[in-house]
Image 1: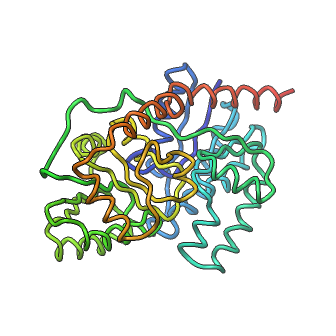
Image 2 (image 1 turned 60 degrees about the vertical axis):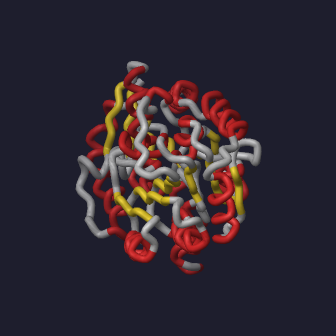
Length: 343
């Protein structure tokens, strides 16, 4: 079995980067030959709004050169689907890491969302199978009328977890991820107005709302923006924290939540469909998208750890969201598609 993986990112702390890096590694451990095409080895336009689409177009050249030597091609992120059809002879898998058109609508408005939905249909009609990393994404695309869908969840490798921890403050809360609207960072910053001043928030990551976090850190000495950091460092910082907070408005299946579950860190997260598919009230502190409610949860649970929730969350991630289990689902899909496509 030989697989081409096409992904915008294969390095860094982002969800797609972590997913595709681990997928390639696990496939190789199973003696499957893997070629990875990403922005790290392919030309693209270094303008934020054009990065993914330009990568998808430029990657077609590399993909075409490899087609004859591989058995299946697997794209990640909807826009990589623009490149997959250059391989006429191979079955095509596209992993959807979230609800593309819904996210575009939220971030850029109705007109952009309309065009995103049209593009979505054009791309998905050309792939053999689309895999969805969350149950909500599966339901979303099923409702839109797409039939060739499979739910294969996001996952983590428990062997990646650190033994040591980093604690910078006596009472430490962490937000780790993309600094953007869909992650609800603006909600968290509003909540910090009502959080006890001796509770310190560490914000780790990068993104378009960095300036907002930087300005907030000047007004509130208990907000600490440390920018992008290597994953190993972030995991140790998470392990040393009292709470992980994720006040998202929109998600796929957040890797950071899986990491917190595995590290046995109490989680405060918003009640959105993507998170509710992963966590219940038995496993996390779930709040509405409301700064006051979020602040109350932080103030309440910083000292009174919900240990029963933590243990149940840990058991779930080990059983359902473990790469040792998920990798076999991808391999079974590749083998099935290759058999059907060549019969």
